[in-house]
Length: 366
Image (cartoon, rainbow, N blue to C red; front, top):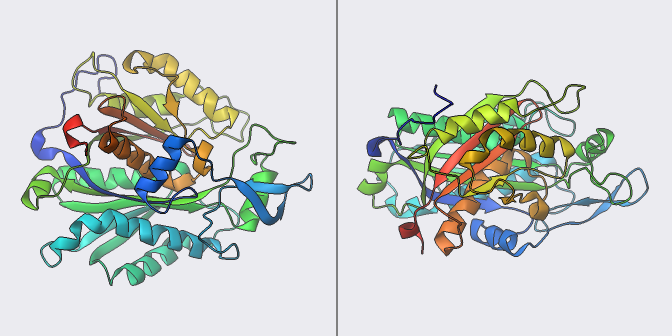
């Protein structure tokens, strides 16, 4: 791989992977479009938890999906978020019933942590297939449990399979919820819970789901599907200096992931127009990005002008990447995108660093 000159050509038209559907459920919106509008307006979905208190005795501040009952457990919360988001992303296929093959589904999930069932992946596969079968024929459901990068990693698997020609269409996304009481207690024990009086460098626990419907260029044309954007590249690298350790992260893993997707830009002079990332208020993530920017800033239009949606919908873990892509699509459709090339990146506590390059042309806008 050449990481010096970034001279790799754009993917051939026949191997391009297109976005034809997006779906979202967040603390600030019931759909992808309403969530994007709230983020653009800077609306925050933060509120005091009804009964969970921090160590100082104050209510924990969370970004809860208010349309879910507060006593719903983590597994049920994630299913209630994932299904509507998945069906929204699948909606462009509604007129093609009976004309397309069963669709493979890839779902990014949180890594193992307190408050989650140990068999979360297996249970999600079984429940998801049972619940969605009335609306869509699914060939298989696979899960990737890797925290913040899991959603982009699920998309990467689907993207590669479409590029290789083994499938024509794929639904991929992620879902997460930090709202289980045991999970919230764990976040605070790890000194990661944001609180005005105690920890200004923590994050606001959130919950959300985001899905993207990916198809090959030829499939989009065959079925006359509206192309919302194109996924030019997705890559995952690994960081060895992890959060919650004594090591110092200097952004090696994130740098590698971003350098890989920069190879898909059309020329050595082309730049990333906007950045959407999962910085959430933690100093670790800010430092990681700072070190990364020192290595790739010449390919970024403005490294300081990034969007961190955790300011609005909280930290949404495994749902992050797919939701960021839905924001890039919304910016293109509504005409407020700063340019055609969007970099989205995510950083998992387990070391996974994922990045994607999304292309939304002006002629795709509504």
